[in-house]
Structure formats: structure tokens, C-alpha cells
Amino acid sequence: NAGVMQNPRHLVRRRGQEARLRCSPMKGHSHVYWYRQLPEEGLKFMVYLQKENIIDESGMPKERFSAEFPKEGPSILRIQQVVRGDSAAYFCASSPPVGNEQFFGPGTRLTVL
Amino acid sequence: KQEVTQIPAALSVPEGENLVLNCSFTDSAIYNLQWFRQDPGKGLTSLLLIQSSQREQTSGRLNASLDKSSGRSTLYIAASQPGDSATYLCAVRKDAGNMLTFGGGTRLMVKP
Image (cartoon, rainbow over all chains, first blue to last red; front, side):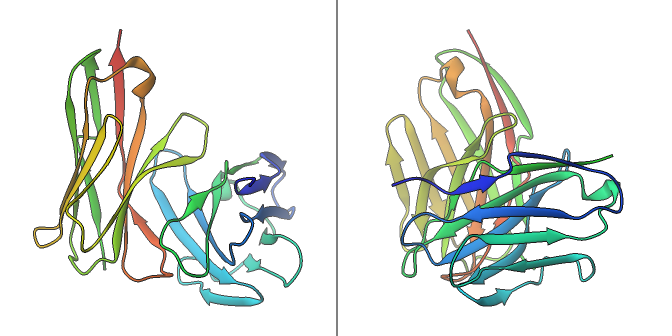
């Protein structure tokens, strides 16, 4: 059973471009969480999704950021018109429908030039 | 709003020492607490999960305790090894299906 997969592992974008980060949860997991770790800061929750639904997006910036978890395929975190302050490690975690533990992916490190 | 604090922020010990990492949280109404390990530039590895009804969990040389009423958890590492060097994070969860709130982490260095 493969773990949580994220790609790309490293992403470089210029200011104003779009960044798309993908997360494939563990098999059988239908809950996905996105977290952001800014340089020298702790992990902060961004958004919680179940298949085709956003459950809690209270940690996600209101502008430029969006997330989806379609019926088929990975969860996508999309950042439009990236700025230097978006440079961070973005982690995805998944958990089963009935369960407690969140399992984390290796992260995507976004660098905005 | 839940706040999670970890003390110390950094710790350096010689190999073989037993050590304790501390985690405190402001809202005792938690569902569970998880301890993670993060190596530089890497993802998070779950070490131990303690449900709110439990007092402790053990895995190998690691033991985590939870005192929900006082808002505290400790991670005890026995006979530390250089391979234990990493950042240790604690995180609490308010409800099932809810997000994790993380502490700032303790950077541990175990010197040979």
C-alpha cells in the first residue's frame, strides 16, 4: 500500500505564474488535508476536503488559492499569480473515512523567483 | 483558538541520554494528539497517536504521555541515538475529521 504521494516534489515558478500541486491519498482514504510550512515557521492548516466537497477552508487565503478533490484523480491545490511570499513547503495528508491518524506525503517545495 | 507550544525549541544531547520533549495546548477539549518526526527537507513521519481517553502510548524507545486536563503531553526518548536527530512536532485535533494544529517543533541533535 503506497503512502501519500505528492508531485511535483520541487516546483519553481516566476511571479505571476500559476502553481498546481497534486496529492494522491493512500488507498482507501477519502479525506485530504493541505498544510503549508513557511520558512522557519510551523505547519499551518489550509483546507480539508472529502471527495468532491470542501469541508473546511478556513486556513486558506481568500484570493489566488483554490483546492479540489474530484471523484476521480488526485487532489489539486492551485495557486494563481504566485508571489514570493507563497514560497513554502506544501504538505498533503490523508485519513480513512473512519479513523484518526493523518498520514503525510513528502511535500512539494515551491520556490517563487 | 487552540495554540500549541513546544519547549524547548532546540535541544542538543550526547548519545545515550534519555530525554523529554514537552508539548502544551491551550484548549483541553481535544480528540487526539499526534507526535511526528520531520527530517530536514522531508515530510512528516507519524510516531505516536494518543486518543483523548488514553494516558500514554509506547513504540520502541518512544513513550508519549497525555494529561488532557492540564493541556500537556510529553515525548520520552530512551537511550538517544544520532539517528534520532530531527525536528519533533506535536499536533492536536479537536474533532474526528478535523484538522491538526501544530506546535513549532523541537529541533533535536544527538551527538555521537
